[in-house]
Amino acid sequence: MLAKSNIKDKPQKPEDVFNPDNNSAIIIKDLVKQFEDVTAVNGLNLEIKKGELFGLLGPNGAGKTTTINVLCGLLKPTKGTAIVGGYDVRKNLKKVKELIGVCPQEPAVFKFLNARENIELFGNLHAMPKKKIKERTDKLLELLDLTEASKRKTKGYSGGMRRKLNMIIALISDPEIAFLDEPTVGMDPRVRRSTWEFIGSLKNQNKTVILTTHYIEEAEALSDRVGIIDYGELIALGPPKELMEKYESKNLEEVFMKITGRRIVEGI
Image 1 (spheres, rainbow, N blue to C red):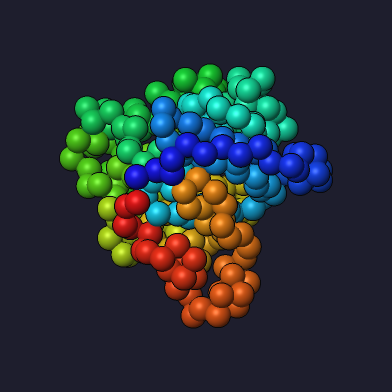
Image 2 (cartoon, rainbow, N blue to C red):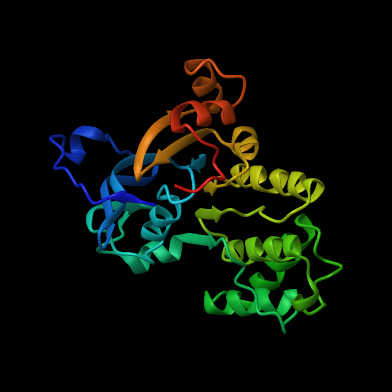
């Protein structure tokens, strides 16, 4: 279950915590999100740099997806706020949405359309020029090895293929900031590894990527930094190697076990 509602006024002001500059892609300030008698996010402060691949980890119910939903404008904060791409999610949500791409946990795919039709649909929703839609579609289908299957209706796709298509849809508008929420769930090990390479390549395009995953080895391999949250609060932050050294652990999963007391796939 989620943490019981217990919001405390913090003595620090956001401006005392952060020194934002032009390198900041996301700044989260004293963020709180309540649902009736529980607090999913409890006073979260975090800064993510432009071009950073940031892994957001935590057990089920820790507040990861809620945090992402606030950053994407799907949920309104109860207290605090977040600055995404220089815009306050409370005041300039339209501008925020122009900068981001979101790959949700559940694939947003129309099963009776083929891959190209799905991608074109979302490209048109972004009001992209048709030429750019085609160029981006061809490129992303090739990178994620879906070109050959792109004219088949997606109802016959495997779970892994749907997730790759979901990622293409999230990236079709060439967003500055990409939220990838459990993008490789259901993929076999070979496909997952090739998808890791694709996710890692987004850094070379100067994109900021926020990755949530239940595969801790994925976060360890890909992330510049990871943040571990539990009961809606940030409990560890830093590059994977530094966290492993700090907690005298052989890998990031061992760090996770030491500071949360349970495996990431277990609920709370």
